[in-house]
Each structure stands twice: as structure tokens, then as C-alpha cells.
Length: 280
Image (cartoon, rainbow, N blue to C red; front, side):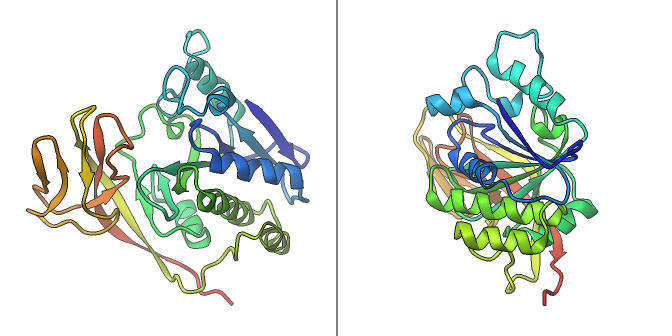
């Protein structure tokens, strides 16, 4: 685990990448920020976590790190020990955790509660939606420390790496780590585009309701797009037993044929809208 700090003092803000070794985009963003070493208004931790999995280009070495928290230093599993060490290092911090998916190209935020901090970040980060995963946090970093996850785009893509850097700069600006002019200058220097989207005035919130199961090691095809309404009775996937039909209406989240071993993704319900401030 690589841990770097910008600024003096005890950090209460952190950015974490490399929870999964097959998601390099966030790692690239953190490494570029470490190399740039910009001036900060308050200290921040920048962490690349599962270096062994990253070196092997695998999701994990022994067990999924984002299902291993709070961890156990006495276990043989590499990720169980790593989860314990990371949780200790992040104590007292509000954490941005950078991820990527096999299911959706645009960035979105994943949280364990929708509170004033989340509403403020949703308004200030370049994300298209917020996903409330409060019923599905067991073993995840949420269980150990206050965490805001962002899914930055498709795994291994240049677009996800650029989005991870843009999201990180926007987060550090929103958390008063980077002065606004410094964040803007870095975004221009890195070529990741403006940190604000003037055309976005609201951000929808979806709450995960249930997992959509699949038969492991069988071929599936997903027929709908994530965050697009699926109506009761609609065919949304095909599999080894034929069409997969919606028993009730839902919004798919993280839905993909190959993203998970035993499920296609999640069925969610649209809850409400977070409004974005008017920008000058």
C-alpha cells in the first residue's frame, strides 16, 4: 500500500485508488496528483491500495478487498490484512474511493446515505447520478470509514482515467483541499476538461433494492441501459434459460453480463433529485 500526504498536519480528507487491481484508472489519477504535488489549503492523504493485485492485473489476490472490511490482521488472506491496515490509516477521514465498471461509461456516485455532505458533493462533482447502496454495504469500505465511491467509467479506458482525475480535483476543491483557482489550473494542465457542468441543474438519486441473480459460468446478454426505466413485463436480458423478464418496474444499476459471478447487477428505485447550485 502506497501512502502519500500533501500538506502538513493530520489529514481528515483522503483519496483512495486501487481497491481492485483491475481498475487502473483511479491509480493513474492519484499518481499524477502525487507527481504534481500542488499546494493545498488543508492536508490530504493519497493512497494506492492493493499494489499486489495491480501488479498482477487481477481484481484481488485472495479475496475481494471491498468485501473484506473492517479486515483482520491475523488472517492469511492478503486483502483481509490490507483492509485492516487501510481502515486504520483512514480513521477520521472522509474518503473519495475511485472505481470503474464493466457496465456504464459515465461517472456516478455511490454512497451509503444521502445527507447534506452527499448532496453538496453531488452538486459539485461531475457525476450523472447518485446511487444509495445503504442496504448493501457489508464488507465494503463504507463499513469502516466515511466513504464516497465514484464509478469513473469503463475499466481500463482512457476516459475512465481522465474522469477519475477530473472527479478527484472536483472533490478536493469541494472539500477545501485545493483552492478553486488551483483546481481549475490543474484541470487545464491535465487536459481533463472543466470541473463544472453548467448544463446540469439536478442529479437523480437511485436506491438499490435487490440483486438480480444469474447462473454462474453461463452466457448472458443485457438488453437495456443502466439507469433507464425497465417496465414490468419487459425483457431486459437473455440467458441460458431464455428471456429474463422484469417482475416489476425498476431502474438497472451496474447491470452487465460479466461484471459479477452470480448476479447481473442491481434493481433500483428512483428516489428523488438533488439540485445543483447555479454557477456564475
